[in-house]
Length: 414
Image (cartoon, rainbow, N blue to C red; front, side, top):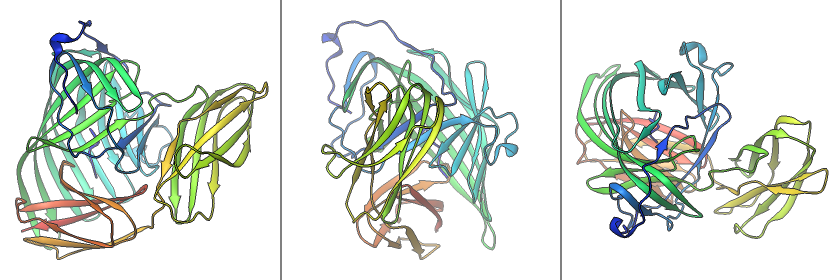
């Protein structure tokens, strides 16, 4: 389970032309799709705070497969009955559903649920209040009840969010003006009951994260977490605007096959979708066609079969109208990797744990029970030894991502 909150070379603000303080009022709504890319953190520094800043993150480099969050109407989703009053659901990877209740200018999180885990807030967790602008601040205290199989966890959350800067943000391929920067300081304390072991209270921990927002986008366009003064995880929006006909476009690996799915909105005189693939991100070849169904909105899928192992495959769609005009989707990526069949031992442990059974490249994060990242690692073989001697006694989560597959393993640090 993870709470999703889921650099720069600084320019002298005095040399930048003055801009008006921006306001962000765009709240996520059904139909929005946000794809975040993980980036390498080496050499990347936290951004300055203050007025009229230029943040330059244009040299960020992808480090892992992207994650797409889709906003859908809560009605009809698998777990909506468990979250009364929910109007929206944020769907991650078609398996994890986070439920939202909108009241006025606030979107309150009710909790989240997947096949084997569930988290519920004591009352709707309210972070940002819309609209917001420079120097606004928000405070939230809540309790989250988390159930993972037979493990029960209660976490007290105390969050302070401040809008700490505004200016211009440079990301790979895009430059955004009138951007707002927020800083979130989160204090958490967790109590976990483990059958046969008893209750463990984890010491209170404090985490700091930053997010950047711009009017017109249904979520943050850059996020990073701070650990001991340095960035330990960073995500950004590479393509924030899809062509007018595309609501979403995703790729999921399935052994040697890749399943492509896309949703359109407001189709008019659409003729055909041409699926294109590239092995280098620039030279695309046609691999299939799907005829358009109807005018309006539709969901499509296509399976690219029997691919040989490659570190990365790139896809895009070429939509052609009846009048011959063509439009391209964004370019998405998919890594061809095996499934995760992982063991962690020993458990409980004092100094280190051995994680083995990974097939292909994987990303490993060590999280506390509130979903805050403690450390991260890249696994390029079948196993990894993770040092845990410096962790405080308590319960932690080893979260592995292999392509679009995620596996969470709880372990105890003595």
